[in-house]
Structure formats: C-alpha cells, structure tokens
Image (tube, rainbow, N blue to C red; front, side, top):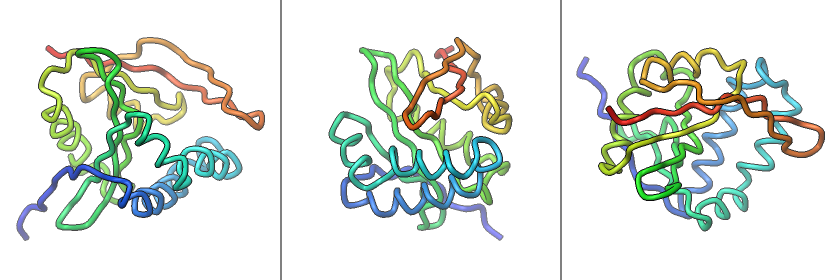
Length: 166
C-alpha cells in the first residue's frame, strides 16, 4: 500500500458546509468525555455554525482543509497577531486518523505557509491530554493558564501554549 497523499488546501466561504460537518463529527467523537455533550453542543453552535465560520473568515482567520487522498479529514485556522506572531485558532484532524504522524506533518505544512513566523500560540483544554502531549512533541511549551467564560455558564479551562522558531 502506498503512503497517503497529504495536503493543505486554502478554504473559502464555499467550504464552510464541509468545515461545519467536519467540526460536528470531530467534536462529537472527541470532546464529550472532556467537557460534556451539552458544552460540545453549545460550542458547536457558537463557534461552528455556518454564520460563525463566515464571520471568523471575515475577521481574518485563514482556514485550511486537511486533505488526505482527496478526502477532507480535518481543518486548521490561523491568524496573524503581529508581524511574525501567529495564533492557531483551530487544529483538528479526524480522530480515526490520529497517532499516524498526520498532525505533525500538517503542522509542518502550515508553518511552511508562513516562513516569517517566529512565534505560534494556541489554547488547548487542560484536560485534553492527547492534544497537550501532541503539542509538547511538536515543540510547544505551556505559557500560561487561561480560564475564559464563553457564555451560558460555560468556561474554557485552557492552557495557552507557544512554539518559538528555533
């Protein structure tokens, strides 16, 4: 069996239905055990409705679809926070595709799109040990703890992590 072909494809407003469908599938497979189904449903409605995704694109988040063998298996979104500083808003790969090196390859491909980058920050739920360990493995360190109310009584209990260019 030949190795899979992996690529990042810039996403546009036309890709919003696909990003929304990926988010629903990925979030429902991974997050109920961490934050509960009610918070998953709330966050999907707040951050991943087609209108919310369109607004995020309009506000400057650059979205990419993760494509493996012509099939979308995930999505990422990034935005500039200064001349050489970036924030990774979203980094999601289908859970059935995880632990195969795909995430690390996607991260490398993403950073190659921004050759001037010096710092890359992100937030990750403090109970999402799989993701935290992935980020550690890929050179991120914990910068600070963030507790951010997001409405309806829900709070994002996150670590802010940072990766600095070597």
